[in-house]
Amino acid sequence: MLEWKFGVVIEKPYDFLRSIITEIKNQKIKYEARAVSYIDLSNNRIDHLTPFDKKSEHQHQNEFRIILENTDNLTKSIEIGSIKMYAKLVTTESILKPWRFEQSI
Image (cartoon, rainbow, N blue to C red; front, side):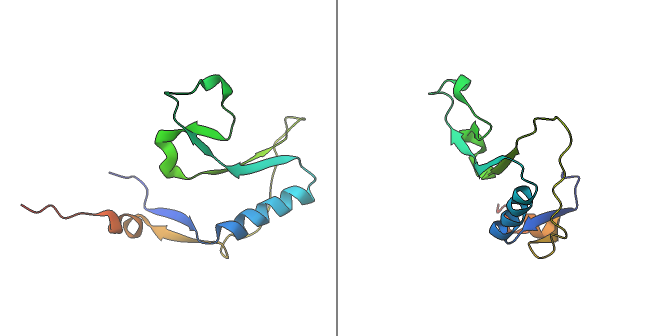
């Protein structure tokens, strides 16, 4: 049983990411951003993985990552304001309902 009752759904992911990247650029922080590549590790050596690589069994996660350069080892804060224009709060029930199946006997 899930212990959470709410989640956040990003409805406008490109706008959301654009706001983050714009703020990173405004702060003149070096960064790298891209979709994660999912790799079948049974055929590849793991010593060549980057922060943008992940096992193929996690492909359903469909991740996008942003990595910031942090040479001074201090906490970085990216302020983009409210995310209401990009996202909405949803209930667990509304997320899981489409995947519920009735068992027929």
